[in-house]
Image 1: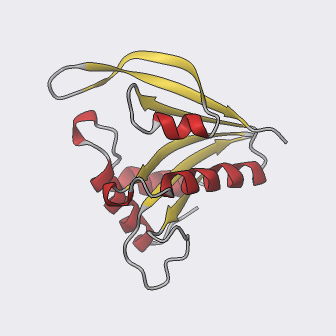
Image 2: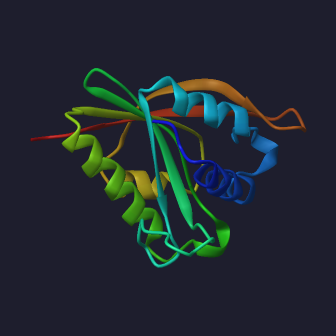
Image 3: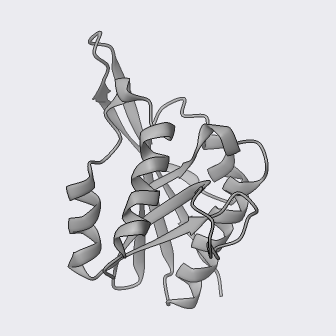
Amino acid sequence: MIAPMDDIDRIMSVMDAAFPAEFGEAWNRRQVTDALVVGNCRYGLIAPDGSADFGSQTNTAGFFLGRSILDEEELLLFAIAPAHRRQGLGHKLLQRFILEARANGISRIFLEMRRNNPASFLYASHGFQEIGVRPAYYRTPAGTRIDAISQELILSD
């Protein structure tokens, strides 16, 4: 899926605002663009009003980026801009990601996040469960090491 440049701009705008620099989780523009050119990746955007229709809107509240292989998909990136958090947009966007995955024949969704990521509550509320830990995977600029938590959601028919 090749994204229009204005959609890449929207993704990067949210990513710059949403991902704390100290954890090194944000991707750069080239990484996002390259992922979408490969063909097995998809993305979704959400506007501040909760819709996916941007029309003349330039403000983007959040996005997801996923990659599928056969009947499995990985949620690579998921973010809601800080100014739009706690309004139910994360739930709505994650629900859309899951519904689209199911419609695409996906049976399992995986994600990985740093331990103590506030989004863990969002993922748990949609049925994701911890399946593994990568000890000391992330490193902060101060040298602190943080585990990565692998999660899975099994989609039922």
